[in-house]
Every structure is written in C-alpha cells, then in structure tokens.
Length: 280
Image (cartoon, rainbow, N blue to C red):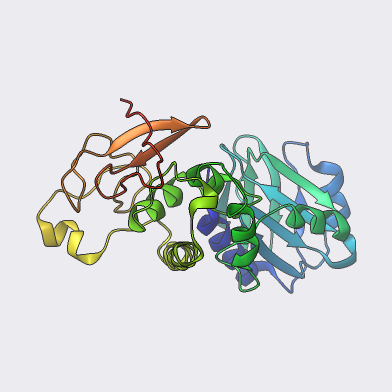
C-alpha cells in the first residue's frame, strides 16, 4: 500500500496540472459514471492529501475522495488521450494532461461535511503544516499497545506505513514492542521530527531513503539494495542480513498481521519488554 509521501506527491502533481481549470471526468469502467457526470466540465478548486487519502475538491459540487488501498494506482499521460486500458475507475482530463485511476479501495463523491468526517478520523499527518503531534502523543501515551502497532494505526498517525514504521523505530533505537505509554515525551518528539524529515525527503525523491550518508553503498563498499520498493533502508525487508550499523542479523516477525523488522542490538528491549520472536 502506498505510504503518505506518495499521496502528497500525487497531490502536488494534480494541483499543478489541474487546479483552477475546468476538467473532464468520466468512468470508462462505469463504477463511478454517475458521480463523474455530475462533475464533468466543473472547475477543480483544490487538491490535498491527508495521510493515505487524496481529496479533489470541486467547491459546492463536492469532493472526490480516493484511497488507493493495496492495488490502486494513478497513471498519468499527456493529451491526446489514449484508449483506456484495463478497468479505469475514473479518468480526469485537463488542458494538456490526463490521469487514470485503477483499482482503488475508495473512489467516491462526498459532501464537504463527509470529507471533513474522513479527515477527522485520522491522526496527525507529518507531511501537513497543520499537523498537531500532541494529538498523536495523547493517544500513544495512554496505550498499552506496542508502539509498532500504534504507528500503523491511521487514527494515531496518518500516512505511516510498514517501511516508515520499521525505519523510524530503528533510527530512534526504539524496540518495536515498547508499549506506547512507556514512550516519554522527549522520545516521541524525536520520533515525530524524524518522521517529518524522512517523509519530506520521500516527497522530494519519490522513494523512501532512510540510511545516513556514512552507511550508503558508495561509502561502505556494499552492494546497493535491490528491491521493488527502492531506496536504501536499514531494516525493512532485510531479514537475516547484517545490520548496517552493528552487523547483527536483522530480525523479522509479525505483529497484527504485518511484517515487522528490527535490529535486536540497536533496538534493545527496555522497560521490561521482550523482543518479538524472530521469524523466517
């Protein structure tokens, strides 16, 4: 599932290409046809991302809410428009560019109040200027749940996925099963600031890089990472490989049905918390 930086990159792109102009909307697949017809020929007034959600605002005519989920994605193209390929849920055309949306978990036309309700269910987004990290800490500091699980809860922090979760915990030296209420405010502030920095880098680069310069392949002489997710990372999907900092094999387990990666030496259990049992 795309993490928050991907949606913010899409928001920037769509804002630049379409906001302020009239757009043509259609649904070649047919599942969004009624809604697209209501917006066809309208002016796209604003585009914003919040966590893993994208909002296309059409003023009083409503807001298109998109959540890509596991399989959704946008395909961008220049005009003239090509023939639709596959199940295109929504096609948006501007003056010189177009975009096709396929396979989203959500593609719906909402009222302003309904769009507000979606945002109100989300925690603070590290990539938004209006984010209030205190809201996230209020949830974390009251919870016995493992911090690794809390960071994946979109009502606690919006936009963080499995890669950012694993990497920020490693970078901050925090064991993944540390209960939220055991995290003091200073460590939360450091974790939040690191998320802001890493995710902003992700927006700029279009991929997730978390490794400090001194641990890069060109400095250490190791082979570059080869993975479809791209980017240089410390622990994510590096099960059994040596930690780039201390050489300890990276551990793997599952937590709440998601893969969990950590370095047992760099993220030692504290506060009486046992590390999860390593898996294959």
